[in-house]
Length: 569
Image (cartoon, rainbow, N blue to C red; front, top):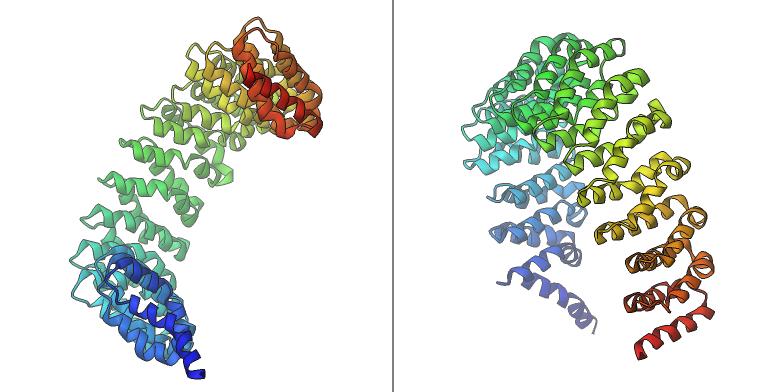
């Protein structure tokens, strides 16, 4: 009986193992995802001697199955008997690291990197490092690209002789005939440099960096830029100018916009890596050129870094550099022909006010903010309004209201209803930044005016806007400021405005709560049930249905009665 029980308990495992051979891809995939269950049932010894060889022999499968297998094997250390036997996982992962599909190879490399840390130094040299060499000298480019991701994880823990071999293999891959391999090597150059001794960074890595940054393929050159930033953080200040900067200067003026884009994208990291002196002498002119680049994508990437670049400038010369070199470029970008460039600038330009201070903000930045507030692109306007609090901190709310709010009010009353709609959507954001007192004084009347706009989309958006404002400022504010005005519209001669009252009540009841809804809003809804316009009466029934869950239970029956009355009419 005991044997029978044992057989019964292993039956599901046998099914899973059979499914690994099944012709149906989905069944094989399901079984792979339960591989740890199979391994647990088999035990560590049978997993090592039977399951892993079986998996290694059946590597040629659908990509999604192989991807799941590569991921599973990265978590298999304890299932094969712990770190002592972790090298048993290398054969199947080595095979997976050579397949054609990139995502499978990447996942196999990820798992290999993970289990490399579980090898002892001896096992690393005996088992793992030979695997890296085999991949690095493989006939197919797929294995050589995978090797690039493994050098940095084994280098720190092997002997000096093996280290020399690893460096030589990496040098070979950096000059491989296949662009995909050089690309993989370039992407891992910075990571590899970080684990090397400084002498080899200077003697080996710099020459590789220079070669890759001059590669005929722009996809290789742009990856070398990122490596250059990492290398710059490793070198002493006195070596940067001679060893790294000539290559980075060349990259900033590269004929390919994709390389220049990468320089712009990594500019802040580069600035931190090279320090204040090189920033002043080299990076400021380079940044100016990127802000004026002929390609919009490059200008947008550089514009996005304006605030960060200015923040990281040396304090003693920060204001002078910004006013003399950066601000003229920024002024040109405000009226750029490309909306993505203007939008990128608008998302960061407000931050310059905290760097330049009150006087410079009022004199130089406010005109730019005003121009962007009136920009035809909604995203530009949104990015300016979203960051008004930065300027508010520097110049104060009064100055802000005199300078920028007139422009916002002008947009709010624009003849084009889509412009008005855009401003309504920004209003809760603006209200939160300006505070309740200022909002009541300057913008409350505007929000109420939208409720009686002649365009339905504006009235609908204004209703949603009220709900968001109540969420921000609270039910008490709503009771004193918003609810009386909304309920006053119930007596408006225009039936459309009376309908808007009902829509507002529907929205506000959710955020105002039971007491305000029952005490102030419900009587108005009851009164409107006798409205002379049938459409209003119909919407009363819908409103009662909507606000019913908020009300005290004793009023629910009255609501049901009124709704039934409408249904039976």
